[in-house]
Amino acid sequence: MKIFVTGACGYKGSVLVPKLLAQGHEVVAFDIMWFGNQIPPHPKLTAVKGDVRNPDEINLDGVDAIIHLSSIANDPCGDLDPKLTWEVSALATMQLADKAKRKGIKHFVYASSGSVYGVKDEPEVTEDLELKPISEYNKTKMVSERVLLSYKEDMTVQIIRPATVCGYSPRMRLDVSVNMLTMQALTKRRITVFGGNQTRPNIHIDDITDVYCFMIDNPQHTGVYNAGFENISILDIAERVAQQVEAEIVVTESNDPRSYRVNSDRLLATGFKPKKTVDDAIAEVIQKYKSGELKDEDRNYNLKWMQQEVFK
Image 1 (cartoon, rainbow, N blue to C red):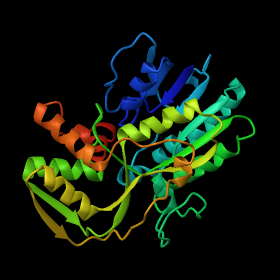
Image 2 (image 1 turned 180 degrees about the vertical axis):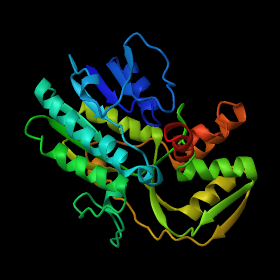
Image 3 (image 1 turned 45 degrees about the horizontal axis):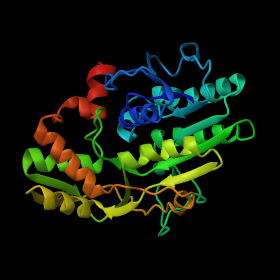
Image 4 (image 1 turned 45 degrees about the vertical axis):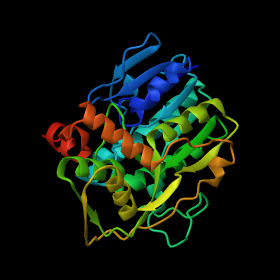
């Protein structure tokens, strides 16, 4: 199968693309490459540096399926330039879906976000709850979902709402909770927790990328799926980190009240089974840091890097 992956050089894409290649697929890795390209060369890989906002740069000839990861990731980055966020994360999705239909592509996997629910009081967040996004990032994800679902009669549409992703990637992110707290412990021997009691869902990067591979292999499962398997508090994450790295935990006040538990029963009912845990992610980050493969540098923090390299 020939698969077109947008955002292919990002945190998730850099793990996903080698998996797709290992499964025998041909992959077109499309990315603007603000953070570079850490995907190893492969005979079946075509890496394209391009802007998802420009349909003329997107060649879908011979493509069987699209995995759309591209977006301005996380709330602070989305707020840097709301116009850019809407163009990259919503308008580009609309244009890509339209182009896919015109090209007769029958399979579209979209990486949405569990943050589209906003603040929820329900003990478990399921896919049928009302969406109340509160940031530009969340809003663009919701709009993109609505657009893609309007094409469900024309193609297989699978929308994944991941929890917070954790674990090592060649294009690392240290601005997501598990990775960030682990790096704090490694470099400062001190973990700062804001609030701490807020419960958040998590998913290992190997599991979320396996979800996308699973969906490519199982087009019969359509619609929207939550993907998060460990609902744990920020303080609990810090304590798990401190079990593997000796570090002091300091709890301070937080102005972020969001606390929710994601229910992923719908995904589990398809037969998908997660294989890794938050503890695995912590251990992997520690190992990569100690081996010298991972460094605490600005490139690994989306907001810092975009302020320096994109908006300079």
